[in-house]
Image (cartoon, rainbow, N blue to C red; front, side):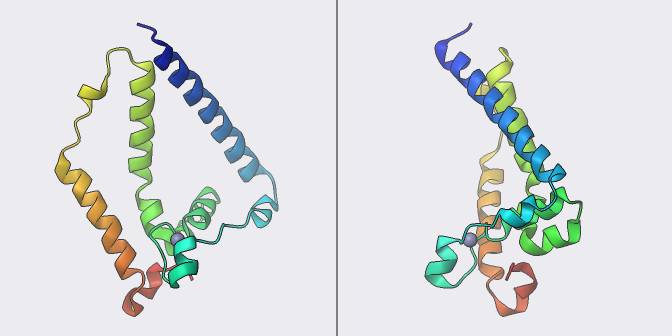
Length: 139
Ligand SMILES: [Zn+2]
């Protein structure tokens, strides 16, 4: 069944995937591009002086693309370690759009895991701002 919504979702996902491939290609192959792309200043950091869970994420992913895992972990360990979840979410999104036999009722994520991930983000948010865990903040 080709509903207009599914067709729209397929085209949007295709354009998004194509744009991501182009961005990653230029990011990896263009020397000096990373120096031009400055990470945005986090509003939470500006307002409170504290790091949010996403602070350092852009730099972490940049270093990860460079193959510098240790630096990537230094800037945002949570972003790096959550990449398998991002891959799983992307694959699931593609399956929802392109696999006619796969629907929202096939998603089997126990509430325990959703709450665990939320708790992990909050714990990371808190401890990266504590002096004893300063190795987790990107500053
Ligand atoms: Zn932030």
